[in-house]
Length: 246
Image (cartoon, rainbow, N blue to C red; front, top):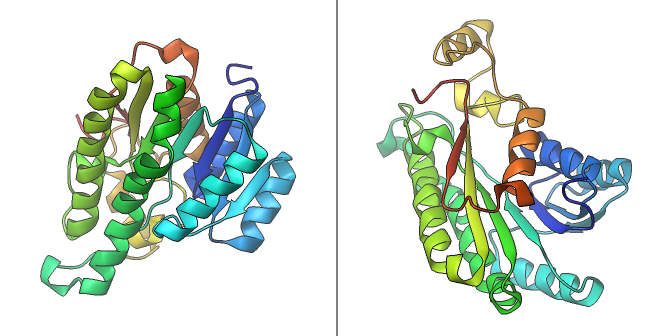
């Protein structure tokens, strides 16, 4: 029960890594507000975990303000925010990525973290307590070809994590990030540019430990960084990648 009675927001928690983090946090005693755009799936997962949920597009300021208002009315505080929601464009040369695709990637992957800082950090600073966990990617540390602007968005998130950590440390607000390798999530097909056995084998060959990351892997790592056991850790980028970045 390392997160007992901790109130946590997890974005993108209807599936994939977000759902894995939500499941682990629930088992460790956290009280969750699960956030996603997939209404049907979000309701199902939240109901299975007996947790609260809020339907929102985290790339939009109005949705983040609504989330803040909801949290302020229903809960007395927020202890943890996990910025997990993410999206990618399909693998292609950088000149072939459309402006719309570029804007979508940065709105979800980067602007959502900005909104987190804008709307939720002030209360954490006032309380002098809080934890923010950003879900970055090995793509931000060791970019893959043809995932150009997705790589860049995750590189941005890594730098943003460090910038947030150094600025918020005097307020006892810790900010860290996870850098997973591609995992068994709905985005895997997009990362690989298809879902054939040949593509899967080629992708796996770049991961020394020989398997994709799982929602359980991410849940375990997230739980540690968001627990009091990691009270001296801030600005860290924890690679959950089976050796991909070695």
